[in-house]
Image 1: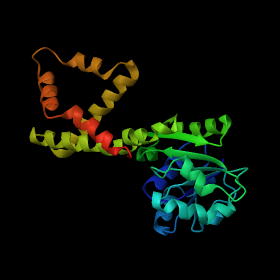
Image 2: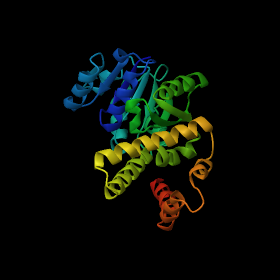
Image 3: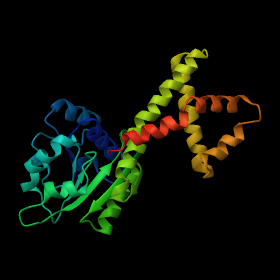
Image 4: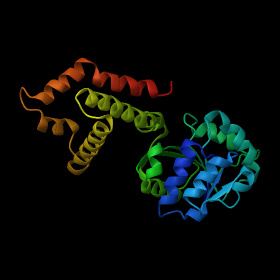
Length: 265
């Protein structure tokens, strides 16, 4: 399968790196198109077999999947630029522009005869570059077979879910924006570790390993987080004091409010 990624910014570059590290798409079958030669040169330095392009119209030719990784306000113009070169019978079109759903994508892509390609709206996160991302997928005008192929590609890059489109914004808040929220927790806990006497780099190391351990416990046991919490909260103990202090400061409500604020109104 040949994939063309239009846009080599943070997300486009992360997607290219993840795909190149996977086994389902040959690195030589990945083309990245961007006007900034520095961005594509950096990708080719890391993955010499990856193809680079400056001309979006030439880049989409021969691809099985054309993936638009550009800012939402640029998407319509870039689609208009390449629309005449797309083969709607053979190519699927994917967009990761947050907030632009399939209805709007179809409006951008519809030709004068009403023809449309298979259209996918994806929300990945930047951890896809290290093959540990979380991607939400919704589609129109597609087939179960093609859905399965797209799902398999992104599952290899971490995990992926086919969801109803109404859940895409929530998925963005949980996983795409969620990367930043997790990073902010790590920063806050690191600062706390410094106050408790650790050097910052050591505190961050401890916190990262603790987070990995917590995730692995949940994955292995399939338990509710509260059940794992109960295992380490002894009556009158230090853990329950810390948890209660966090809740008094609004920990849970702050997380929920942050997620709600991340969902497009």
